[in-house]
Image (tube, rainbow, N blue to C red; front, side, top):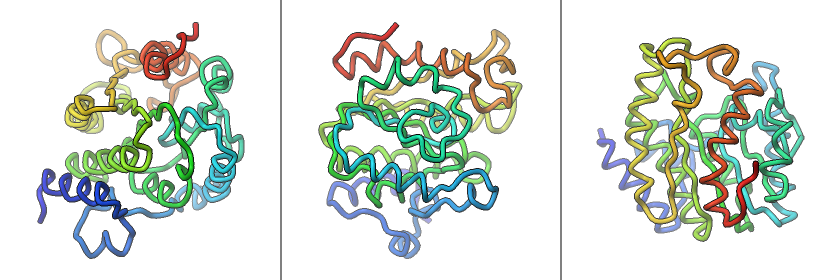
Length: 262
């Protein structure tokens, strides 16, 4: 069994060499599920939204060019709404999209239910082809919680960052810590999120990567989460998206090279 550090080196060296992971190759190499690119069937099985239709809409938008900002993630990012509007789900951040992202030629690569392996499949199938964004914001991994080990989740996130650096070498990466979830601070998911965030924070020391942990912005003084901020203790409310946008904006504007929105 490969250790987490060995997996990290193996994944990173593969991307540096320009060898992108395919499902069959990943199966043979003994890598964890978190880096085996696969289609996400869960949204269709749950009758939530058409995952493939959204993927095709993203690819079509990317082919048009003029993409300066990418927002990459799962349902938490998906709910920003924006572009593309194909298969949008509960666009709680819609009222903020134009203010913070619209003039930055942003494309929403957030897909509900996605785990790290699904993001990697999307990367391999056209979602970042032929573009040169100024900034890519990445937050992924909460859906891997409870299924994958901390080491494997870190490897998945690191692999996503490595692929972005290789395929979009001029793009600055804003890596966000995974947001807290669950009502109280003593749950297994909270503990694992803290472990993952501590591990991925070191990526912020690498050239072209900025790490930002906004988790405390969503917590009350005792570490609990209010339903006013996250109604289901996972997805932000409109108020939660406003908190996110305002907390991220100074760093995003600095990376983007423009004036902060207010």
